[in-house]
Length: 362
Image (cartoon, rainbow, N blue to C red; front, top):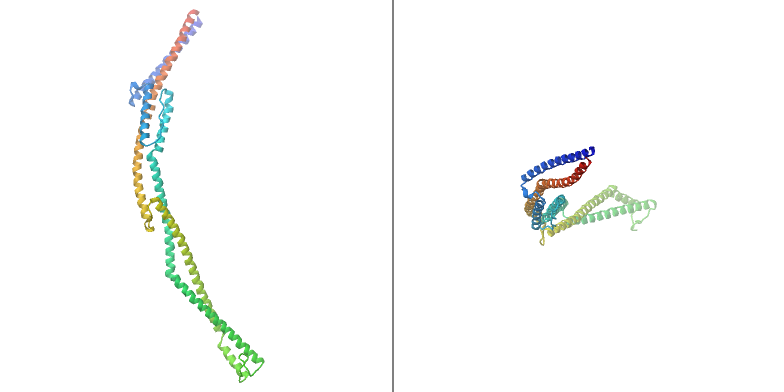
């Protein structure tokens, strides 16, 4: 009798547990269905066929967008089971991301952004290199204004060089004459003679010639030689200054050639980027500015198109959220209820056997 009572108590406990679970699931189902109706789903949608049709609608939207924006997109699989819904929803997100990144508008936008970046980079490079060229031209012009033309400086250098040569020759001749006169006087002082020691002509007397030599030596003073030496140094200093200026101008010219070559190279890149056969140096910046303005307008148009894409994609995202938030919870609750009923049906069969066994125990 106790065993029979225990079996019947287990049956009653199982019955109560089932009723409790069923009541909870029914409440959750009803709440989910009410919520689904708020998302514009109807009773006919509250099944796996309704879910399949809902995802099929998204698939059609994705296919239309993929065709419109030239994106290669695989269709979504059919949703034949509630357990597949999450994976399909993930594929929806992947497809939306693919359309965003691979659309023809996005490709054009990427291309036009590259153009704008290239144009702006070329403009910056040209302005920098042309600025260097301008500075060098100004430096050259300032030197030419201060120093004169290189041709004039070279002519002046030639004249100064001739003056240096002449001054050195005069200085050398004066030195040699002074030395000759001093040697002749010294010779006559030690060896008086009736003949000149230089030209060997007859002289009145050695004493008279010595006096004449002394007077001549007094005329050729050391100060005269110093003055000549100073003149040579000053002239040589002027030559060095001219050489330094000519060297600097030569360096500037070399730098100008290099700078002009760089400017021409960048100008060639601009021509290649913008098209055409050539652009005058003075019009490069204007042409680049015009290209940047025109390309920026094209970009604005593409951005508006990209915004339209995003609006269409947002609609698909909203539909996917509507399915996940509104429809899928209903179908899950209904599936759980169906499983609960199947499990209870099996349990009731087992309970019937327990009831029969309990009756036999009595």
